Image 1 (tube, rainbow, N blue to C red):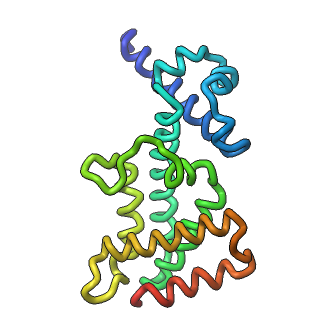
Image 2 (tube, rainbow, N blue to C red):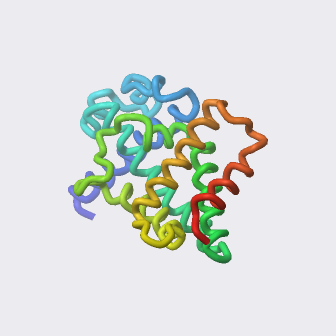
Length: 192
């Protein structure tokens, strides 16, 4: 291995460490606790080293969002691949999405609430974000209904899931009705 290859590998490892540490700190204490000073202390690198990888907290949030998008896409695909039929796929997708949001609140915030400097629904949208949407579209497109564009239906269904995830996390909805909400969403929106 050349010196340049070793340096590139070390740089990539430092970036992974910064992102993982930011994510861990955000999940434990919220995004307000994620500062370059605290990150530098936790990973035992200087603040200038952090700034050589990420110019701002915004870029770190974006990196966490991209990682989270890849994880969400993988979780949705894994869960829906075992489902039997379109209705079950949509119900599993909904439960998987809501479970992801509940288990990873800081990642979910990085994806959908905070400014990570990422373009959504644009030509320059990063691939992990496009792939997360594609993972939803794969199951939802088949239940959009006649005359409904599958991507538009996926956006509406996704918006409904996002609303449920956000309101549940804010304790605006009764937790005991969570399963009924998913069933209602699937039964009323999806044409199966």
